[in-house]
Length: 345
Image 1 (cartoon, one colour):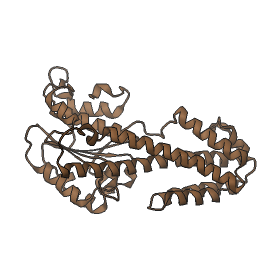
Image 2 (cartoon, helix red, strand yellow; image 1 turned 60 degrees about the horizontal axis):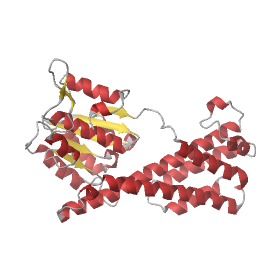
Image 3 (cartoon, helix red, strand yellow; image 1 turned 90 degrees about the vertical axis):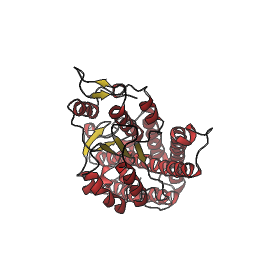
Image 4 (cartoon, rainbow, N blue to C red; image 1 turned 60 degrees about the vertical axis):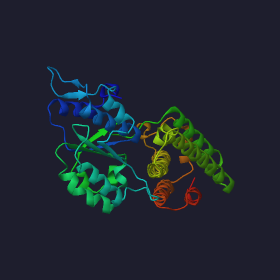
């Protein structure tokens, strides 16, 4: 992809191209957004632009502002085989970027470029840098080699150290507000709400809700696995000879990426349920529809009629605690079961 392939309403892309046209590209960026795959595509495109052999230039033959997307350099960067574009991803069992990975990454960044004008380093899921790795990276982040660009990608910058954030130029992609729900997501939320209203007070009713939630999470995980496996170098080069060390690293990166993306999407799903429970709490206080996140769900008012504001607020607190628990290594099924049984519905 080239920058022209991204939405022309994306302010982050326009800011990057403006910096390129003025010859004032920063040395370290944080790309933040909802979709890690889109952030990777943006980082890949910037790497192509600064190293493209036949770039699109600013008016009057000025600096490069986009890539041709077809020269040898662009193709190598797309295939992740360019010697001067380095990617680092979480690959440990804890889904973190370790200090060992960062030391190797920094060593590569400081080596002289072999075939490019600029060396580019991309840290995928930079919010997964553990504290030791992040602290080891600070000096390089503040004073990288003069012909290098460092790009950090994150869907949750709140998890990053302030010392790292302060050394990066932050660009947000995909909108600053909450992501809009797709029709399929709205349909599932409506079914969950209807099942809740139909009979969730009994133990059997609660386990029906748990079944709905578990089935949705299984669907999410299967989709994540399929999508990330298709993008993995393991699939792209499955019929070619790969060094055992490289294959092992790619396998670890894929496992960590699947788990991290699944957890992110699980948190999104529970976040939608939390917003729906907030609507129920608001309805117990007879507020206007204009304040509701999902005003067209009929189950909201029906459930609210049987709850006090105090109990509706307790539901929000229960789901918040469940989210925090799931952020640890607690057993998922147990945390969800306990959370659903504690809801007052």
